[in-house]
Length: 295
Length: 290
Image 1: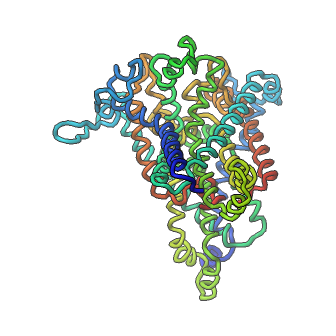
Image 2 (image 1 turned 90 degrees about the vertical axis):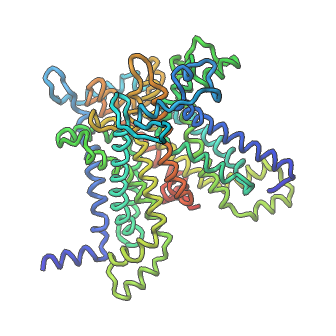
Image 3 (image 1 turned 60 degrees about the vertical axis):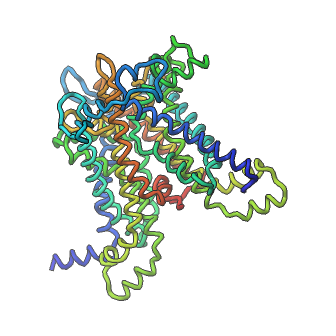
C-alpha cells in the first residue's frame, strides 16, 4: 500500500519529486556553506590551541580597518571594469566585422571558439611565458617598438602587472562576446536597415540608432554572464602573479583564498569570501532588475 | 549590406587578420610544445624556424614518435601527466552525467508544471550561479576533510556537478520550453503518466539540447581550477591544477607545460564544434536562442 502510494506520488503532477534531487544538492552545497561561512566569520583558528575560537565581531572590525582588503576591492573593480569595456567594445567590433556570409567566415568564427575551451589556468601559464622579460614574445615585441623597458618585466612591475593579467583575460573572453553578439546580429530583422538605407543614414548612424537599441537585450545578458565571472577572478592572478608584486594584483577571491589556505586565517578568509558573495549578489540582482533580464 | 567588391575584399582581409591575431598565441604555445629547450629560450623568439622535437610529449604523455610509428610507454618522472589527464576525464564525465540527470528532471518540472513560487525558484537557481567558488570551496574543504572526500573522485564529481547545475537547469529548461506542451497534454489525455511522457516523448525530442548541455558541463569541469586546487592535494589532480607544477626551483619546464596545454585544447574543441548550433544559447544559460 505504502509503496503504491509512493509510486503514485513519484509519477504524479506534483513538482516535488522532480525538483528534490536538485534542491538537495543545492542545499548541501550552497546553503550550508553560506551558513558555515557566516558562523566561521565570528570565529578564528588559534594555532596555539589548534582549535577554532569565538572572537565575536573581531573579523568584521579587522575587515573594516584592513587596507589590503580595500585595495583588493579597488583592484577587483578595476579589473572588472577594464576587462568588461575592452571585451564589449572589441567583441562588438569583431562581431560586426565577422557578420557576413562570405567565403571562409564560418571557419573564422569556429577558430575564435577555440579560446573558450582552454583552461584559464593554462592560459595564465602561457601568457606568463609570453610576457617573460627575456624570451617572451609579447615582451620582445613591446621592447622592440620601444614601449617597454627591458628593466621592467611586465608582471613584476607594480604599475603594469594588472595590465599583463588583463591581456590574458581579454584575449580569452573577447571571442565569448563576439559569438554572442554575432548570434544577436544575425537575428535582427532586415526591415529597419532597409528603411534607414533609403533615408540615406550613415553606417555610424545606423549602428547607433538601430543596431545598438535592438541589441540591448543581448548586450545586457552578455554583461551579466561575463560580469559575474569577472568579479570572481582567481585563476589568472593565481598562476601569473599570486597577487604581486606587492599587492598590485590581489583580487578579492585570491585574497580570501590565501587568508584561508596560506595564512590559516579561516575566520578572516570566510569573512572575505562572504563579502565577495554579497557584493556579487547585490550588483547582479540590481542589474537584472534595471536591465530587465529575464530567464 | 554588400557594398562593392573592394570593400568586401577589405572586410575579408580585416577579418582574417583579426582572427589570426587571436589565433597567434595558440600557434605559439603549440610551437613551444615541439621545441627543444634552447629554441624556447632563444631571443628573438623563434616562431617558425626551429627543429621540431617530440621530446615534450614523450615526457608528459609517454608518447614517442619513432621509425615504427607511434609508441606509448607509460613513464615515470615528475612531469608524466597521463594519469592527470585520466583524472580530468573521469571527473568531467561523471560530473556531467550527474549534473545533466538532475537538471533534466528539474528543468522538466520548471518548464511544464505550474506551481507557486516557480519564478522565484528559477531566480534562486540563477543566484547560486553567482556564488564565488571561494565562498563554497572554503567550507567544503572542512566538510570534505571530515568525510574523507579530499582527493577522491566522489568529492570532485559532486562539486563539479554542483557548479554546473544552475547552467544545466536553465539551459535544459529553455530547450524544454521549445517543445510545445500540447504534446504532453495529448499524451496525458491518452492516459500516460508524467514520467512516461518525460522519458518516451520529451527526452528524445530534446536530444540535441541534452548533448549541448552535456558538452558545456564537460568543458566547464575540464577547465575548472579553484575547486580542483582546493579539494585535491596529492593523489588526484586535474589538468589545470598541474599546469602550475611545471614551475620548479631550477626554472619552468615550458616545453612540457606547452605539450600539456596544447593537448588539453583538443578534446574540448572537438566537443564544442559538435554542438556549435547551440553554443550561444549555452554560453548565456539558455536566455539567448540562435
